[in-house]
Length: 179
Image (cartoon, helix red, strand yellow):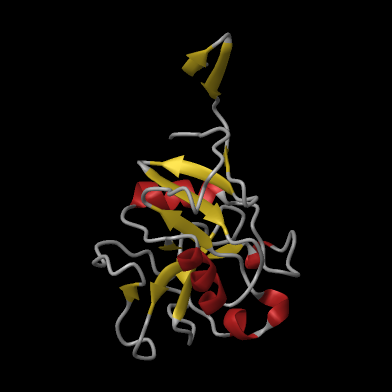
């Protein structure tokens, strides 16, 4: 640990761990970006609305390293009533189709330069994608299945990404883990 600011015998210290925000979100840092889960389970639309309210979007995944980091970092995230069910170990990402599954894009507007479709079932009839997390039978792959958007019992949480946290999104910094 090293002091960031020292004044009158008190120091702010950067600790390895989690970035804590005043709003109760726990932020993780990776490659200069900040990530957290939505506060509740919901549809992809609800998860994206929460992300934009914080100044970000659902995560854009740019390469295999980021995909693997996300898969492992949020590995114990399950659908609303799927705790412990490996098939429901997943989280919403910002990948979607505006034309019923014909073409796919990132909600952030970034170009699609990487994708990791689950070729056994991609897309499974849906237009909103989710990442299969580490405890899923197909970890690291993506799928889109409409029941996860429509059925309250099997809604996911979403992974929110911010490029640069602002005072309105993460006002009280606690600890940060940079990988």
